[in-house]
Length: 137
Ligand code: HEC
Image 1 (cartoon, rainbow, N blue to C red):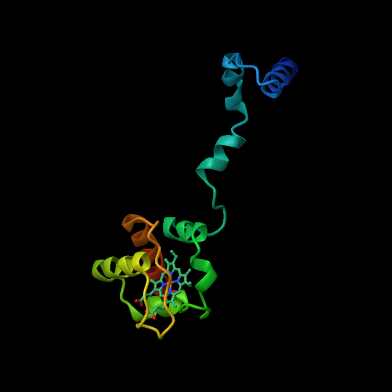
Image 2 (cartoon, rainbow, N blue to C red):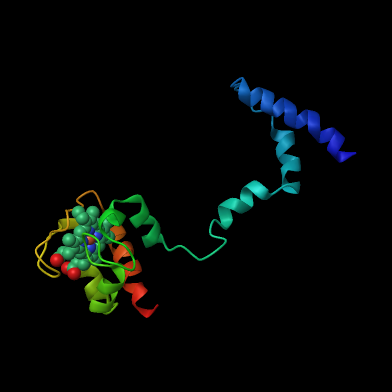
């Protein structure tokens, strides 16, 4: 009963979307969407497996992974080595966030990290917090 009623409704909604129809006539459609919440759920729980921290996401979106891997040294030190070197304190997070933004060398060798002047201090801190959180694993 319900399904037979829904099908033409959904079809017409698709039809309108495809034509770029500006008439928002899905008021009725949204009444029945609560019966299929799949689309909403995917927004709420995007990490079915292991939780992904904000910092990890930010790093994935930036260029960090070009030079840093979690387990092994590439151009820059392994994230785990960084975590092992610096205790996860607010001071270290702050200091290393500045380093991420300004770049530089000297703590691990002569190779310099490129500056990331487009990264905000807040985001840099999220990333560093994530890196330093890897030490316990
Ligand atoms: C061009 C390669 C490169 C990229 C890209 C890069 N790094 Fe680095 N990173 C390095 C190198 C090389 C070092 C070691 C610097 C040193 O010896 O002081 C380093 C060191 C670090 C350190 C430790 C700093 C210290 O003083 O001990 C952190 C934290 C870090 N990187 C985070 C990041 C984050 C976060 C990103 C992405 C926004 C990033 N890196 C992108 C090359 C890179």
